Every structure is written in structure tokens, then in C-alpha cells.
Length: 112
Length: 150
Image 1 (cartoon, rainbow over the protein chains, first blue to last red):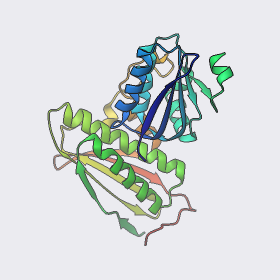
Image 2: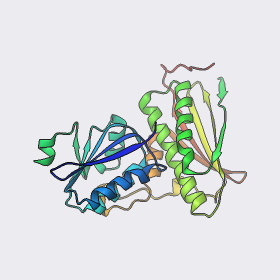
Image 3: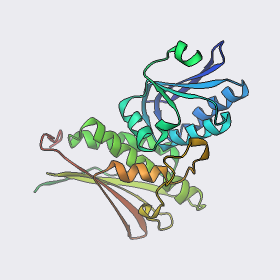
């Protein structure tokens, strides 16, 4: 299924990137481009909405490293609605320790 | 023991081939009756190795070439292989990431793909044969798996 990444910046400064389809090395640049846009708009935190993301290879993991490096160690990165197999990839590689995992976009939790 | 040889697939050694490779793997996994999460892991493994063939084998080697896929199904296993004609390289020699506990912003990015590939399949083998790197991915079929194709 075709990949899509779409950034929305909320009025509380959250960069909400909705990912859908399949994320492999050929389309990872599209994800990075949205991260770059979020950084350019000086978002306070990043929320990656993944309910519709059916597949993610290590290219997605590398893009997460890229996001964390661009935004700084103290910026929170939320992973929202990750499907089971995607979650397994995040856990197996220790990425779950560096992000905040949520089942759904809870604005109160995320934006305080 | 009966062995069903899968239709082979030849594609350009570029990242644009990854989605066709994914479709092929999912199709043969379904034919072998492999369950959803095992099929995902197999697809991921083949994707990771294919990506490395393209990026490290061909692109960084200043080469162009094709990717050759095929495999077989027998009573106990599904075997998928991928071959390339870049410089000899055994993915099993890739150092595993030793920093899985380290915060993301301090991580080395190398080795994650091969790490996922090797861990995701029941058996992984590598050969260099007739000028080709060949990575072989083997998944066990459970006793409930029934072949969809004859």
C-alpha cells in the first residue's frame, strides 16, 4: 500500500505526523521531509500517529533516530497506535525506551 | 517429501523494487500458509537484506545490477532466497548493534537492518555462488499450515 506522511502542527505546538501504508527505505525520505518541516516550525514535541501504518522496516527506525537528533534529546517523541508487528520491531531494537507509547492521540496527555 | 519450486522474480537493484519484493514474499508466504506475524517477519527480513544489496552492494560499490528472488515450499518449510551480483558480502559478518539500550540520539545507525533480518526468520543462510551473493531465508510451516496452491 502506498506510503503517506502528513504533518499537522497543533495550536499547542505539537508536530503531529500521520503515517500510513508501508514505510521502507524507498519512501523513508517522505517521512524525513515531514520531520524537517516540523523542526522548521519549531514544534515542542513530535507525535507520530501510526494506526494506519501496516509495515515499517529499519528505514523507519533510522528516521526516528533522525527525528530525535534533529529535535534534541529533551524533546518528547510519541508513538501512537502502532500496530502489533511495528511495535515488536520497536521493542526488539530498544526504541520503545526512547519514545512514549500511546494507544491513541490523547491531547491532554500529550499537550498537558 | 514433495517440494514445490516457486516462480522466480528478477528486478532492478534499486529501492523502487522493494515494494514488488514485499508483494512477492507475502504471496509466497500465503501460498505456504505461513501465519500473519511470521509472514511480516519474513517480509521484513527480505526487505532489509534487499535494501542492503541496493545501498551497500550496488550504490556504494558504484555498481548496477539486478536482484534475483526465488524459493521453494516443502512439507516443513518455506525457503526464499535473494541474490545480487555486487561484491561478496556475508550479512552474518555485520556487527550486531551493541547499543540497544542507548538513547536514540546517541545510537549508531548501522547494523539494525541485518539484526532484524537474522532475528526474524527461523533459519538464515548465506552462500557466494557463481558470482552471486545469495541470502537464504527459511521459515517453518506449522502442522496447521496447508498450501494454498497445488
